[in-house]
Image 1 (cartoon, rainbow, N blue to C red):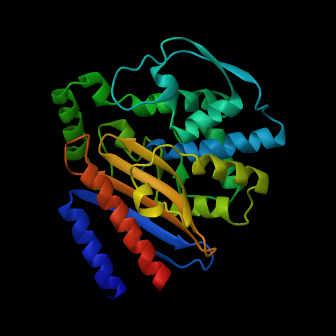
Image 2: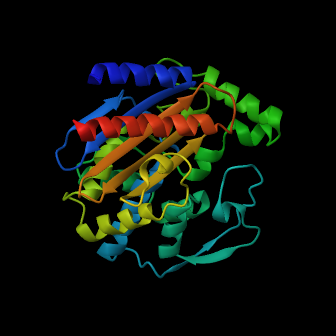
Amino acid sequence: MSTQALLHGLREQLHDGGLRGCFLVRDLRSGEELGIDPDIQLPAASLVKVPLALATAERIRRGELDGATPVDVPPGRTSTPGPTGLARFRHPARIAIDDLLYLSTCISDGTAADALFALTPTARVDELLREYGLHGITLRHTMADLTDTPAEHLGPHDTGGRLALSLAIDAATDGHGHPVRQLDNARTNTGSARAWTDLLQALWTPSAIHPETASRVRALMAHNVLRHRLTPDFASDAGTWSSKTGTLLNLRHETGVVEHADGRAFAVTALTESRVPAAVQPAAEALMGHVARTLCNHLRQR
């Protein structure tokens, strides 16, 4: 099958599955890549925890932070579905910076991430990305701001959840503006599939990022416990899959690297927006994995 025919077929599958998708797969050895709309900027959701991890790990390496330093974290007391970790704690906790880094990256703990953002603000994370020559990812706010969406204000019941998702789907403009600020490209954290893939390449291959820092972030992504999205299509006994997911309202993302036993490695980024007002969509998760895996297989064979 030709590449153009393949891409056309995958676009049709995404449309039929109720998804708008931006995908990019890159061979980290040759630089060859294959994608679907990889340059479109989309809200980043929890993918921002990767540059946060990078900035935190680098500041620890430089001696600007001490990973053993304890931080007092107030309880999140979250009652809505979704958030994990400290966000659901009922009592204050004292946790070392190193352990906050684990919680933020590996279980996508938003409260832990905000404790790290208090030490390294979004502007400083952005500054470090530019230091490394990485562009196309913009951080504007913390995780507390990210999760303060209509889903929380309308309540966790089914009707409120469907109303929030319907608003997320129907109120977007063609230019990715949105009355929900977390979905408005001009006001939220953003990145394109190409930008996230560039970050992965900088972490997995020699770059301006210090090898010690890059190794630490790779290890954190390898221990990601949220493995329901692309993992079934990329993890195997003959390879490893290291990644970070991002989820918010109708957004479902994942960015990661598959390393095969033969030494080849591919960076994979999948950013999607669902047109279906449902919070639980296993078919959408499976479709994301199928499209990403098909692109990767085609590139690998080519």
